[in-house]
Length: 132
Image (cartoon, rainbow, N blue to C red; front, side):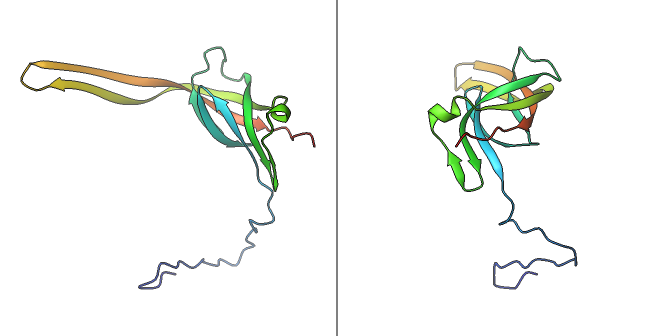
C-alpha cells in the first residue's frame, strides 16, 4: 500500500506464513577469483573470469577473504588460509560485446574494435565453517 505523499510501502498479507529474516542464519563468504572479489553463499551461481583449466562439472576451490556465519565474522588470514570455498563449474560463455571506438578530429583517424570477455559460471556448493 502506497500512501500519497509518503514513501512508506506496506506489505501485502496473503495469509501464509512469512519467514522471519532475523531468525535465519545467513552464511556467506567473500572470495577472490580472477583479481576480483565476489560475495557468495551456498547455492549461488556466480560469473567469474574464465577458469581455463576447469571443465564443466569439475570442482574448483576459491580462496576466502572473509566468512560471515550469523554473528561470527572471520577475517583472520591465518584461519582463512585453511578455508577454501568449494564450487562446481556450470558453464563457460562470453559476456556482452563492448565497442571500442577511437577517433581524432580533423585527421581522419578512426579505429573500431570490439571485445567479448570470457566468463565461467560456477555454483557454490560448500562454505566450510571456520575453526573456533
